[in-house]
Every structure is written in structure tokens, then in C-alpha cells.
Length: 331
Image 1 (cartoon, rainbow, N blue to C red):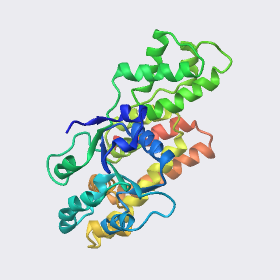
Image 2: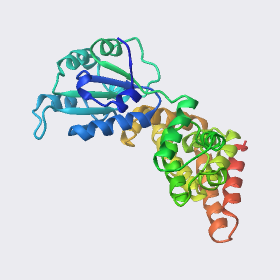
Image 3: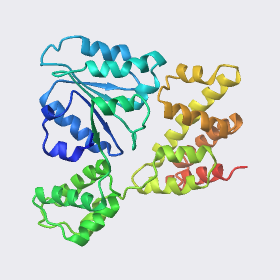
């Protein structure tokens, strides 16, 4: 069965035209959120998270009558994490459960996958559910969406300025929403938006994020220094970055201390309340790259860095760059 475009579904929203089970996948989370918001305008919706809910919890929702609406409507975010928590018997029963979900009940599954696997349960889902794709917009479609947003607010923007704005936002709808809203407020008394307005207001989006930075930092990769500079250039305060480093050092120390005493790594992660598979994998990888003694020395160096910043009035940006530079080149 042909996949449906989430953009068209949002534009012409009519849930009655969809099956009782819908699987939405793809890399564009902003459009998924818009779809869910449209759904919430029509129904009372149960919002569920795959790393928290069990199979029995999900079944219980659809085994009871809806109190204030016709049918039960549930959105299960991070369907992939939900699948990883199922036992073998539960995985076998899942397609049969989906078959039993019928209107007026509705179940929306939100996957982060960019391509659906051919294996179960996806194979069965493809046969019984509507499959909706939520891909990133093409560069041209992204620029059109920016232009429509600006013109709907009574402003003009020429093609060159539009291209310049688009280049700063890197085809990210979540990021574009907040930056364009800032731009519209700034230009509220203007007829047209200029390149100067864009450069003054819009913070360029960097491809890297704080989590990539932490990975590079604990791997002692010199690229961490460049990422740090990008983060600071895009409004991340040095104290915020230092706090993130310190929190991760504490997690790593707890993890390494307990595992070195003989506790299984997965048991330690459970005790630390770290449930998401990606976060568990990241912590294990980082722990394998850094020594316990180094983590302790990092804490001491962070203390000295803050002392330089807050007591000795050293430039806060230079101080954090010196701290990171020391540790990514440390042998």
C-alpha cells in the first residue's frame, strides 16, 4: 500500500480517512508534532512514551471504555524504544493486538526510523495500518515554508534574503519556528525583512549539539574544541557547557565505580535510572574511553576553571576553551 505524506495529511486533516492504526516514521519530528496537535484538536488523546509504557499498559488503555469521548485515542512516541522492551512472546502477540484496535479507537505509532525494516512487527504493520512518512523538506520546499510564514504575517522578503535566511536555518523546522518568530517580532514595525535584520536576529544553526560535544570530549578528540566554539557562538553559555560536563563526569564515575566492583553494567544503568537504549550505549562507550583517575582530575580542573572565571575574573569563554583544549590533547 502506498505511503501517505504527512504534509498532505496536515493540510487536509481528516482522521476519518485514516485506518485505526497509523505508523508515522521519518526524520522530521516537527511535522509529527503538528500532526499530533491536529489530532488533539478533535480527540482526547493519551500521550505515551515507548521507553516508559509496557505492553500490558498499552492493552489496558484499549480494553476500557473512553469516559468523555467516543473511543480511545493514543499516540505512542518512540515506538522503537517500546519494541526493544518487549519480550519474545509479547512481540509475537503485538500484530494480533493491532488488528483488534478498531474505530472509534485509534492508535498512532511514532517511529524515529528513516527507513522501515522488512522484518516483524513492521511487516505486519504495513499490511494492517496506514503508513505515513515524515521526511525533511527539500531545500526548495523549506524556503517556500519560510516565505509563507513571513508573508502570512504581513511582511515581504526578497529571494536573496530568503535564501540567506534559509542557509542559516539548515532545513530544521523546529529551529526555524523559533528563529522566524524572533525575526517577525524584531521587524514588527517594518514592511520588508532585510538581510541586515536576518543577520542581527537569527542565530545560525550548527549541525553539532552538546551531546556530540560530550562524546568527542570524553574520547579526547580535538574536534571537541571546534564544536565547543560553535556551541558558544550559537548561544550556549560556558557555564551551561561546564555544568553538562560535570554532570556527565559524575554519571561516569558512578558507572565505573560500581562496574569495577563487579556489578553488571546493565544492572548499574538500571540503578541509575538510565533507560533509553541510546543513552545506555553512549555511557558505556564513554566509560570505555576515559580512566577513573582522569575523571577525578577533570573535576579538579573544572573547579579551578570556575575559580578563574568567578574569582580571578578571567574571560569565561577563554577559560572553558583552555579547559577543553587541555583534556582533548591530554596523553
